[in-house]
Image (cartoon, rainbow, N blue to C red; front, side):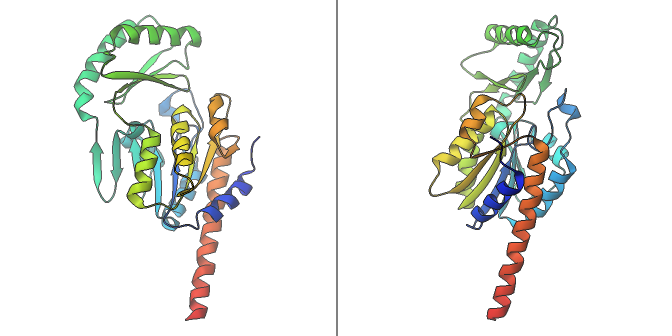
Length: 279
């Protein structure tokens, strides 16, 4: 059952009083609606505006995406955020700059892409998105998506070095990733440790976000946390199982973020007034 965004914002605002506090969010399907191709996706303006405000009110606002860091930064368009790309392989913030923990795999991944293009040349509606150290094979536009998915997995089983790479799946996409101890759950745990977080709110919509939500549950009670699932026709069943609350779609996530920014700003103003009165 979905929870009204305004109600969720009130819960989140109370929780985020424990400092240091963070908002951590996915992009596609969370800040932006799912569309036919990744290039068409656009972050909702209301979400961007709210994230800008929240970055001034919280100790950390972070974006964790399956997109590259460069693509995530282009979409969100805010330089005061921390960006984690390729499910944890890449990182950028204004303070420390850019880092890629999987750069050594780029050459092998180019070779794998060339082989995969040949394997899928006759599979209509498939498209390989090259993210340097991850290959994302989309089949959303395939006339027969179930059959296309099977062909993609069969091809990768034949050509992918299973000792160095692994498959994962998202919404109408199969991904090839290096076998590294990285996922959104591990990213969340590292951010909690790095920033000494006492509270955090996470928003996500897909299987990779489930890892982050499970990590937040595991960090309780030391971390006061709220896992917010953003649903839709393609939301995986396990999303509702691990989410503390569910929203219906990205537009509701935008409402949540906007209301949360208002509540946190009001709380800061009241706190400042009390300090002035005491002085």
